Image 1 (cartoon, one colour):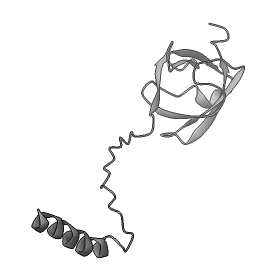
Image 2 (cartoon, one colour):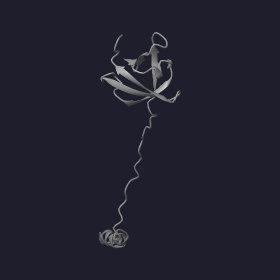
Image 3 (tube, rainbow, N blue to C red):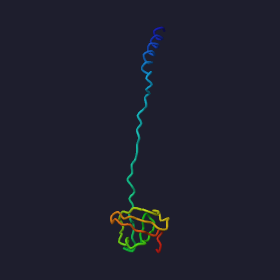
Image 4 (cartoon, rainbow, N blue to C red):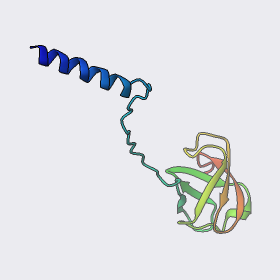
Length: 111
């Protein structure tokens, strides 16, 4: 019994010095992140062609300026002002392939 107690006392004396520096072990943490590309919006439908009546993101828009009458379905666009879902009065779109802007009525206007 004396051997067990003396071995325990000697072990705690030796281990006490190793733990005296205050360094604590912090487990390595791994993170899993998903990076998604930016949304790509396109003109879905132009009906009738070259009319200025567009369906974008499922909402109807009507062109105010003749600059966008030549826009066709499939061209990438960016919204500068307004709402993607057509809940606005006027929206401003930028066509990435033609590099011009167009002002449109939201909600379809005449059609």
